[in-house]
Image (spheres, rainbow, N blue to C red):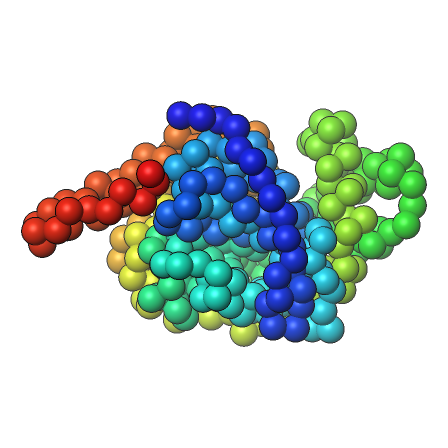
Length: 309
């Protein structure tokens, strides 16, 4: 399987925003990739070429992130959902597979619940859910995002911005322990984070630090309406994962078709720290969908289309 891909970028109009989208891969079944809050589509570069060898990949910069326009909105999780829905409806020729990380995973779940006819399957990489909702004040994440909010959209030099990012504090609310971000990420990762923050609308962090990010996001009501196959990728909470074990188990029990894979010893950015392992897992899951599609076509007496000629 080829591990190189020609990636093009363009601005597309999605409702109130002009959004940047990267595209790569074979023409066929679309695979839409949605990044986490503060990030941009390039976060998926460690795994995108492998996926583009098999699928028609669309990687979106969310509103207020990367090269997409900032929008006068609340930037709650639910405010990102219409952009993903409109992109799939307008630009994808058939139901899409949605791969979402963190915020992107929560948006992917909402799209699958609200517009099931647009979604073939969803891949949820470490969605935080209430870890960044009701429980955020009980975690080190609150101090982290408060610090990010102070430097987002900054016009500082890259070296100064990297220094500020490296010194972001992760404060344990139940002890005096403080860890610098530089203790958890290497220098190159800190530089990428700094550039993402330079392009971020600071307003995107307001609902997180104010505790309103999940307002209007009704997870339990959505789960029963997600009928497509789901791959749930859980990072290790003891290593910085954000999906709590009880939340992961709740999803696994409530979803009609959920395959759950744990990444022990791996933090929130699974696609960055374990790219080979995660692409193998994702390919195995997606090929099972292809096998099922082909079997269904054969039972119906139809010759399955070769989407990836």
